[in-house]
Length: 173
Image 1 (cartoon, rainbow, N blue to C red):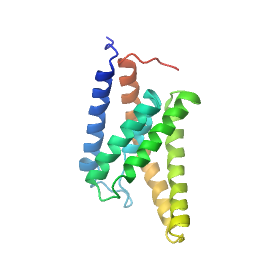
Image 2: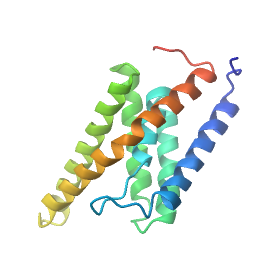
Image 3: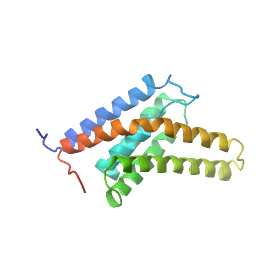
Image 4: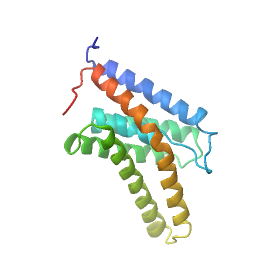
């Protein structure tokens, strides 16, 4: 049974996914540590939503999810929101123009995003602070967290795919 495609229903479904993701990230997953790393599911959620719904929905999803995470975490206000906004838009464009909507594509995009975040960290430390002290440690931490958090790609991939197809989306673009 297919649900009639309605933008209001679609945004309500993704809003519920966003709320559940933010609550899960900030309550259940916050105390979990593996090698002093906390898993982050918000990047995986943003990538999967952007893959299936495009750049604007991905950017909006990332922005709101980032604000939710920023509001509850001890981070720079707006940094996660702006990062996820850019990730959602870039992944949406890439998936729409260059990639198939497959799980392998989600993993490739996920690791490219994390590589981009490491490069941004290098630029931030090199250009703004003019001090690369601690960069290698931070880059290794980011790479380990990316590997640890990649376990969230399959569930979010299947949820986003199911929502996309349930609201009238096509299998392939």
